[in-house]
Amino acid sequence: MLAKLNLPSKLELIDYELFNSFNIKCYIKRDDQIHGEISGNKWRKLNLNIEKYKQGKYDGILTFGGAYSNHIHATAAVGRDAGIPTIGIIRGQELTTTSNATLKAAADAGMQLIFVNREEYSWRYERDYKELLRRQHGNVLVIEEGGANYLGLMGCTAIVAEIDIEPDYYILASGTGTTAAGVLLAVNSEKVISVPVLKKGDFIRDEISSLLTIAGLGEDEIAEKMQQLTLATNYHFGGYGKFNETLISFINEVYKDTGIKLDQVYTGKMFYALCDLVKKGEIPDGSTVVVVHTGGLQGTSSIAELLHFGV
Ligand SMILES: Cc1ncc(COP(=O)(O)O)c(C=O)c1O
Image (cartoon, rainbow, N blue to C red):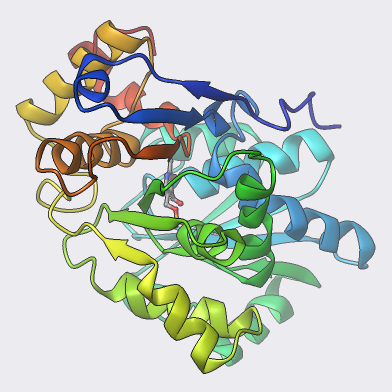
């Protein structure tokens, strides 16, 4: 059984000098506190997929991820707690079950890790490949990389549904764009700022648009939604998993001033973007903002010595 989940997650007002000085009311949606391991958007994206698993006659769950995938870690933890066999197809034949803390945690949670080369990994969206995997591993429920599927998207709409204020902006970190698409689908007229953590983040606009198509929106509705979306593409710090001293000092400073823990892969970059957009006036004085804390704090264990908070 899954340990108790902190749902709905809390919405807290952030007392931070920068926001106060620009008269910005900034709240944080504490999805990082949903569960010790299955936190943030990982729970949101897995939730309805697990419901589907329970309703079907599946032999297990199979999913995909890279070396530092929070999704792999979270899926393995759900599998362990809910008694569901899990298989992870991992990009990189050179990796092992102990290559890093994320893969080790997944293996320790009982996930079967299968390491494939880059070419094979690139087949992950192909129907034939998924069929082949089902023939090899039984009737597994296949969940896309990062939980980026229809049920993942719909699970993320709950982030907005749980909030009873209507802010001017939502801001969140994006990898596949699924969480941003779910939030965008659920909002009324609020603007959504997605901060891609990968170098060439522009692709996320197309990803979000196709996810909204899958969610059943028509062309005009999608066009309207896309008007509400801003991609802040200048805050990737060199690309996925890359960081520098500026980002680390920023994460430490935010922790000192607010007690909020951020990670260097996702939420640190998002919060940095937020502060910069406030300073530049791109988020105007007097705005109300909801920051979605999408979790990912286990990823800080690889740089624990640089951070001023317990990891
Ligand atoms: C902590 C964290 N935040 C944000 C994201 C990005 O979410 P999405 O892939 O839905 O854009 C991820 C990855 O899935 C993540 O692990």
